[in-house]
Image (cartoon, rainbow, N blue to C red):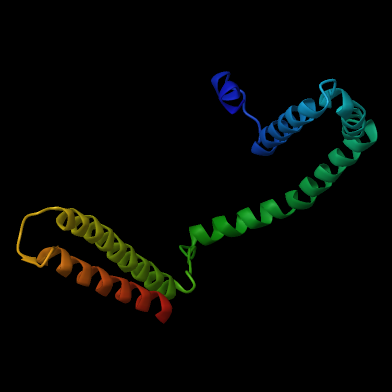
Length: 170
């Protein structure tokens, strides 16, 4: 449904799309139980009541008046604010400042997450490489096992311990 709307350059809020999708799903399930079910016909009285209420002259008048009052409340303040900004610009006293709270904590969290991600990637590569070496017949062997595969498993367990310690340390 979303593709059909997009192909025809029709846009609607996601909640409408989800509402229509939900109604379609309910109708599909309902028709398996009762083939004569028509969800749209069942919803008609409710949608009509909502629609009539939304476009009633009383509601439209109230909404328009609320918006007009909000606009007029703000119109008085605009010239004062604009004059103040222009005066500060004229006097070269206009400054813009910003503050990012807890930036050090955020930076530390990002760095820690990147290190954990790199360790997980190395761990994944180690698992794959160790598995390939383990099934191959090449290289020095201790009994039936490849020495390189044994070293790979030891490194694998070491990385798991490091990652678990880093995670539990927080």
